[in-house]
Image (cartoon, rainbow, N blue to C red; front, side, top):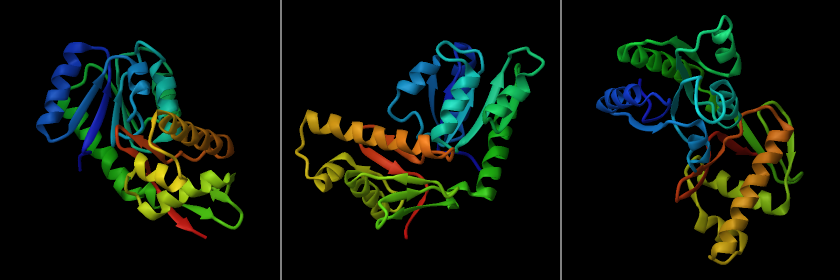
Length: 228
């Protein structure tokens, strides 16, 4: 009950070196980020299966980082931090963390916590909650019933994700469906379209935005998507 990949966001070099090695030995691919802004600048920032986050970080504060991640991902998230404050546990859980461990913490405890969170995710299966494409109304319907108005271009994009059934859709395929040529301008235009669609979803519903980028490949809709 372990994730395939994990983002470790912590600026303690010695701690992250040994913890990442421990988790790698268990078969997890670990990417380490010493600065929260480095994670957010990564093209796969919201594509990890799990996050282990410190609260005292260069860049944006750990609590704020959790809130940002939670806008785009429902993956497991564990806080392991030495921050001393009477309300630190409440802050972390309130921001969206699944579990909190106070440093110093043993690597085996981190592993057990990851497994516990993964079991919870497998049991609740949040990705079973469906989004819906209403072609006639040109709207994307969120799990909470909120309706996101779509442009003609947006409808084509969402149709591509519907047909992909959870698999990654390449940039080339999206450009072809949109009738665009393969050049730098087309790439920038596609990125802008995806960004605007994400922002429109975020403004309409508090539901986690399942539309995520995959580095150097394309985009994926990481939730059940149906046609109505």
